[in-house]
Amino acid sequence: MNIRRFILALMLVYSFASLDAKPQLRKKIVDEGGSGPYKAEAREEKTFADAVVYKPMDLKAAAADSKLPVLVFANGGCNDTSLPHERMLTEVASRGYIVIALGSMQFDINDRPLKKSPNEQMAAAMDWIIAQNSLKKSEYYGCVATDKISVAGQSCGGAQALFNSTDPRVKTTVMVNSGMGDFEMSGASAELLDQLHAPILYMEGGVSDVAYANGVKDYAKINNVFAAFANHLTAGHVGDFGDIYGGSFAQMLTAWLDWQLKGDKEQAKVFTESKLDKYPGWTTKAKDPNTGWSNVPFYTMEVHVDNYKGNNIFGRLYIPNDGAAKKPLAIMAHGFNSSYHEVEAYAETLAQEGVASYIFDFAGGAVTSRSEGNSIDMSVFTEADDIAAIVDAAKQWHFIDTDRMTLMGCSQGGLVAAIASSQMPDAFKSVVLVYPAFSIAEHAVTLHPKEAITSETGVPVMGLPLSHVYYDKLIGYDVFKEMPKYKGEVMIVYGDKDPIAAGDYIQRAEKAYGGCEINVVPDGAHGFPESHTHVLANKHIVDFIIRTLK
Picture 1 (cartoon, helix red, strand yellow):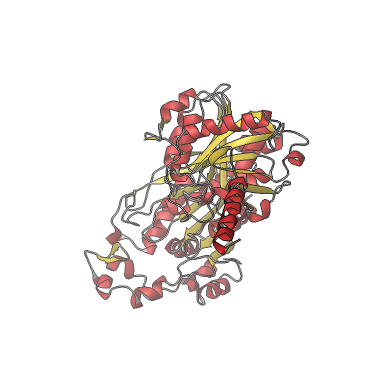
Picture 2 (tube, rainbow, N blue to C red; picture 1 turned 120 degrees about the vertical axis):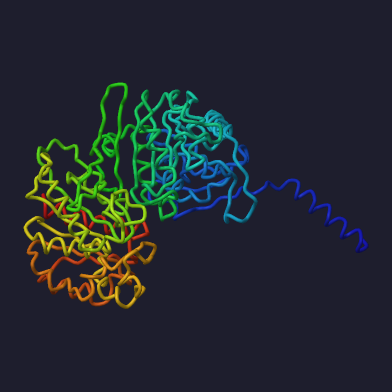
C-alpha cells in the first residue's frame, strides 16, 4: 500500500468512527454537590436542548422514599443562562428536587452570546419531565412527582414564572427579586394575579432591591390564593444566591418548596409564624384571603412629631403585632445627610421580635429630608433636641412602655445619641452607637471648608449646606466628657474596615462609659454596605436591645 492510500484509509476509519461517536453531554458539580442529603449535579440533556437540569446524581436513591418534586426556573434578565443562579439551584436539587433551568450550560458568562429564553420553554420543560418519567429507558423513569411541579424566576424571570403560573400543572409560584407592580414584562402583568390558582411566594432583597416596591404592590393585590412575602432586608436585587450553597435565598426557597410540595409542617412555620431563628436578616408575612387568616408580625404607620422649634418631623412607627399592651421602644437616629431608610432594616427586625421602633428624618438633616427645617439651621445639638421632642411625644403613645426605651444612632446619629443620652440620662435603658462618628468635632476644623464655619447662608459640605450654626458649639466640644452622665447599658458596633469609627475614639468612649459592650464586625465598612456585614451587625444590635429591654 502506498502512502497516499494508507492516509486515505486512516481518514475513512476516522470518519466512520466520528459518525458512530456519541456527543458528550456537558455537566458540572457546583459547591461539591450542595449541602443537602443528595449530592447534586448540573447537566445537559440531549432530549431537551437549551436547558440545564440540576438533579441528585443518584436519582434512584433520592427517589427511594418518595418521588422528586420539580422546579422550573427562569433566569434574571429573562436570559438563557442559569450560571448566576447555579449555586442556589444546586442546593435545591441536593435537598431532593429536580430543577430545570432555562438556557444551555455555561462554564463562564462570556463563553457564548446570551439570548432571551421564550416563556413557552417553561411549559415545554414540564412536558419533557413528565414524558421522561413515563419512559422506561429514561434515567428519570418513575422518579418524578409529576403532580408536584413549581415555577420560579428571578427578576425578569419572575415575570416568565408568573406568565406560566396559570398552567394547571403548577402547584406553586415563586417570585425571586421580582414583582409586576404597574408594569408589563415578558408578557406578564399584575392582571395575572387574579388568575392564580395556587400559592405564591415573593422573595425580595429589601428596599434597595429595585423589585421590592413592585413585590409589595403585588402582595397587596393578591386576593384569591395563599400568599407569602419573605424579605431579606439588605440583600438587594441580586440577593445572596451567589454565596456558597446559594446563601439564605436558597434556604428560604427550599423551606417554601418543602412546605408546599413535600408537606413539611415545620418549614411552614417560617411563613405562618415568622419562625426565623435560622434566617437572620429576614422578615416574613403571609395571608390567606379565602379564610381571612394572616400572619402580620408588625404594623407600620406614619407618625409626625413637632420639635421645639415648631418644625414637623416625619417618622415611621413600627408596632409589633404580639398582643402586648405595652411595648418597649427603640428610637433610631440616622447619619449625616441620610434618612430614616438607613435604620429601616433594624426597625423591621426588632418589630418582628416584639420591640417597637420609631425611625425618622432629622429636621434639616439631609437634602432629601421629609421633615421640615433647613440644613443651615441644623447641628448635632439641634438633632439631640429633635430626639428629646420625640421622647416627649412617645410618652403620649399609650402602647409604649416608656420605662423600656433604647436610643440608637448611626454615624453622626451615633454622636447625637451620645449627646442626647447624656442630656436625658434617665430616659433610656440602653444606648446603641452604630459606626459612631465621634471624630466629627475634631474633623470639623481640619477637614471642612473654612468658609462654612462662619457662613450665614450655607456652604456645601459633603453634599449638605451647613452654616455657622453647625459649628458654633461643636468646635472644641468634647463628647467624651459628657458620656459619663449616662449610667445605663451601652453597646458600640462598628466594622474593622471603617476609617471613621477607627483610631482611639472607640477606646476613649469605652473608658468614658466606664466599660461598655463593643462588637467589631469583620470586613465591615462604614454603614455596613455589604449584606453579610449588615446581617451580623443587625444580630448584635437586636440581641443587645432585646436583652436590655425585655
